[in-house]
Image 1 (tube, helix red, strand yellow):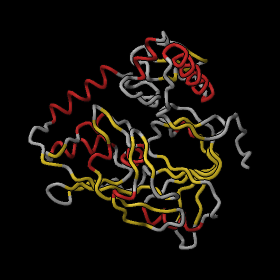
Image 2 (cartoon, one colour):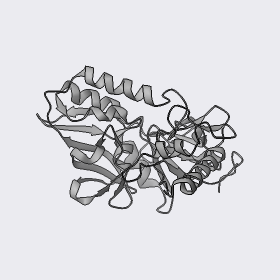
Image 3 (cartoon, one colour):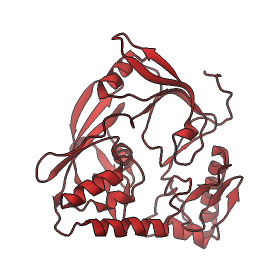
Length: 306
């Protein structure tokens, strides 16, 4: 790790050639040229303001739903996990959650406050910022169902308040102002007298029973096609247990690909392509990726930045 002191005398937490395998739930990924973990929004603003306008920027939270290729990421990765994970009720219906707050924490907060439906957030294995960026969902709920306003930051470090109307929302996708990233969101939930921790616990147990929790994966690899389920199509194609190198299709849930500890990102990406092709041949359905694949093919030597 190396530390850089900016013009204000503030020491920034910077790392160079940082393996992204340490920051993704699949536990694979080559090095990022620069990896920055701001301790405050003010640090983040100063860092962004000092970067060249053409520097590629990539943002990461818990690193779920993300495959970083073995060649790593050129430019700078900004990790939001060290930012203050504020979660607060603004009134009887509105809740403000910072981007780095785990979705499970948002679920617990809302259930205790008798707001909802929000328990479904416990089924999303990531942070609020990541869930917003892809309109993540679980158990029939979607992140953007109750979003009211957003706080964003652009690549020059300028903060903005944006209404929901500035975004186009779809199934597991989102389109909005370019060159901005989420700092926080305000949700407006209805009172939910039926919300209780027992129901939340049952949802968590259901997720654990159905999915390979505790194994290195990204969650669901493919979006569910209209009127169907990706996992069912993969299973019907006889692909449970199919493998490439150290990557395999989960025997527990076919829409999960597991890293046994020896997989490369290339193993996983090759298996993804094979699964898509086999499902297309067998069923005629073209599965669409839910996981985001980023970075360059590898491997790349450490220290060989370009």
